[in-house]
Picture 1 (cartoon, rainbow, N blue to C red):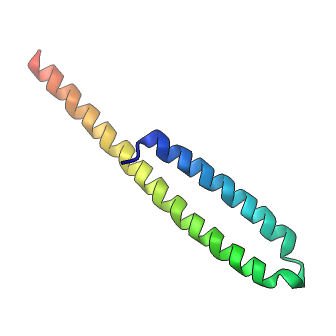
Picture 2 (picture 1 turned 135 degrees about the vertical axis):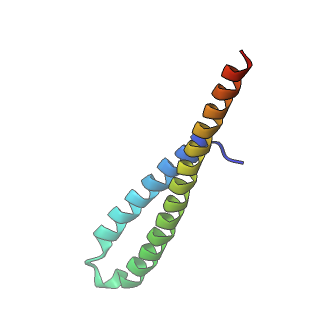
Picture 3 (picture 1 turned 180 degrees about the vertical axis):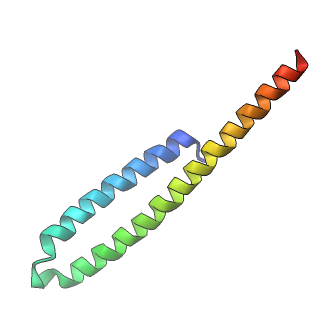
Length: 81
């Protein structure tokens, strides 16, 4: 299982890769010889975007469950004192 910090690192790494892909697409998109390359890179960017969306959702869910656990722990501790 991946913890929140690992997930955040993966998110940053993926965003960085996407930035480089966007730059590459911008550079070669005007070249007729690179039409196929642009198509492939566009598909890769879409895949990365899907991964980013999944990671952001998982990170959001992780934060919610952590907050709920903290609230439950606090109420249990207060109830025992």
